[in-house]
Image 1 (cartoon, rainbow, N blue to C red):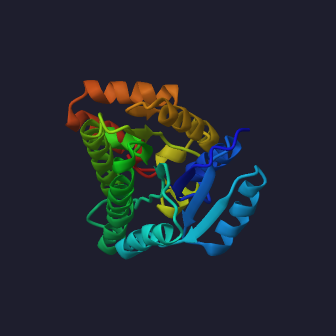
Image 2: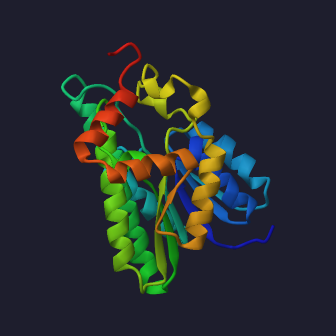
Length: 265
């Protein structure tokens, strides 16, 4: 392992894909700034990552609150840290038909999945554009490619992230900064529990779930290669290809059948 002496800022770093990405960067000699809400979990993961011989700074922030996204970057500036890589991993969903779901929960999800990502990316770019280097990995999803009945707000947020990532990538093409969108499919993480989605047909066969290690590996390689987007997994590549050939209404119908609760006709 070669010490890179570069910091990677990773949100949602204590579990799932974010945790596996943090571990990959640590193994490859990158110093880490890991962010999550739970202070105790952060400390445990920080000690684990330090065993790879890298510096690890853990910062507890609630990125459902936009002021916490601003204060995260303020903390970094106070400590003289300018991350060279930004991983916007933190995100959640809310399951159910839109007329039944909790609007306050959905507004919080928009704040986490979109607003905090915009803020952190804006501050990262203000810092990095003058330096002419940097990399950004935004967690989109195959959900970004199709309307998502039973999970409509989540799909909408990820569609935004993909479109916006592609747009700013083009703006930054001569800046020395790359923007990569990672599009995983259903993955074996705690996401479905947090989304109250355990009754969905998506989980009927857990053998179909990707491992977070595989998704993180694909995302890491795509980011380091400067790819515009990475669809992780062969089945997800097929799903995206089919969606691209379908009308929006057909894609929505197919996605609704995949995501409706077990027992629904």
